[in-house]
Length: 211
Ligand SMILES: O=C(O)C(=O)C[C@H](O)[C@H](O)COP(=O)(O)O
Image (cartoon, rainbow, N blue to C red; front, top):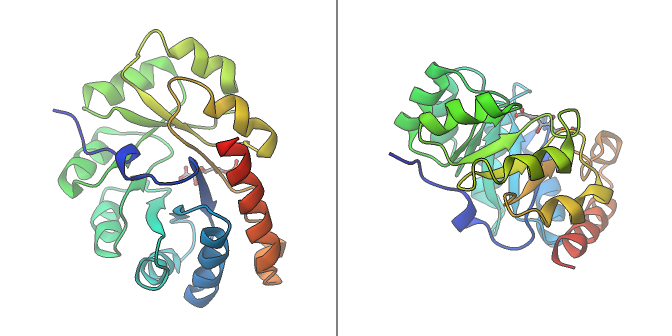
């Protein structure tokens, strides 16, 4: 059995800002800047105590944003993500217990893989959309190109070490449906509430992805 997919819900540029958030009002302002810059699919990482509240606030208050939760590393986090209104979920790696929790939650799920063997295990669980992580450490575009003929039904979202200069090459690969990263949301820009700078970074990334 295959799992529900994220790719059909994506709209606009195939770039997913990966967000580390501390407070819901700031999260909403940041998400508004990203959406204004054209990036509408947002991943809130479960790395901070306020992450669930931040994702919930974005889902409720930022029209046009498709919000997911990332960094799910424990099975119970899948139900928490669903209850917070997440439309997709992401993990840095995959275990049997995470796979079962993802199937129960029923949300589109991107399990992280770093090797061919891990991709095959994810396929055995029925997942066809995978996060390739950390992408640049594990070979970047050439590694993805190498995996394409082996498992043509797998669609990847690489993250980890990606910057604006990687966007064009990576999105041109046949087995990549999107890519993600934190480079669009520098921590100092968030801290100093420089929303126009974030909007500009988002607009530049959107143009690269569509060009
Ligand atoms: O595993 C998770 O859920 C993560 O949040 C990992 C992130 O996708 C990367 O850490 C991206 O981070 P950068 O390399 O700074 O772009």
